[in-house]
Length: 462
Image (cartoon, rainbow, N blue to C red):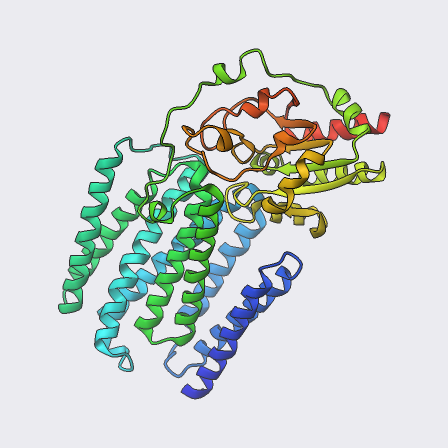
């Protein structure tokens, strides 16, 4: 294929990417958007393979077979609750691949005669720096989400000093590589320093802030891919990487607003709890009321508006199908059911939307935070399933709380609040929730799916 024809195909692929992203803005058009984006990627891959610069296909085919097999295995075996870890790993692999491609370009710059030397060297250092930091940062995020890494540094000042030193070292090494591109040792030293920087930026971040970090790392992987596009002189890689980088930054900004966090603090890895709060004994002591499924069913029996608030606990219990069955039963008995979705519920953006879509919950019943909060005072029952920090009223009331200012779902304003949880254990923020001890709150202690099924059985017996 000629260069002009390849660029035309790349342009069509890029249009597919943009239209695909537009489709992903709505749950109803998301499947078509996803398909359009994937079709664009297929076009781009085919055009690249047919490029005259591709001399042999053996390694490509081996890569397709091995990578496809691993991808298919992961897609079939990874639990929905482990999707955030999987996304984090994918971000890391993208960043790592970008750093390695940039290294090969420096090893054999003569194969890229169409790329101006200064563009090649500057883009290679950018790709190595961002890609390596993305890889190690994503691996730390994966380990934290997986529960295999619990360590968190205590000295915020020391961490900032180390991060500043590492970032300065990376800039010096990047400048050295641009001036002396034949000194590959400097490039690998840059990659090593950036890898340590990725660890240091991610390791102090707590679980409550992990959705923001995943969105940011997704943006980093896109920026690394865009830089690699400049290394290779590949237009579609520049466009697709830029789209991922820009959309990731936009999503990170949205997530920051949803959590009342500063984007600057996210960028420099300074998220996390910042203040001491009341102990669990002080908040809960003698005030928590528990109820049985039969008692809860009596309240549901007269409810006319029920708002269900899903959280990570619902994902862990795989209770989304049971929740849908409960909603269907309530609707058959004359109640209106809505779902309240907090932007950071779960462990990654859109986590709850995906789970509920898997259970065929109608899109029309899903309401974002700003759409549903005014409805809670009218709700007879707010049913919270495994959510914690996103319904914690201290975010509204306690200025000393580490989540103060974070927009929350105002479930405490409903006539009755039912909370399904295994225990009074804190959420990702690590702080107690006064909602559990509120006068209008009832705790239904148990596994999310089992408790919902018992609720359904009790309702049917009435």
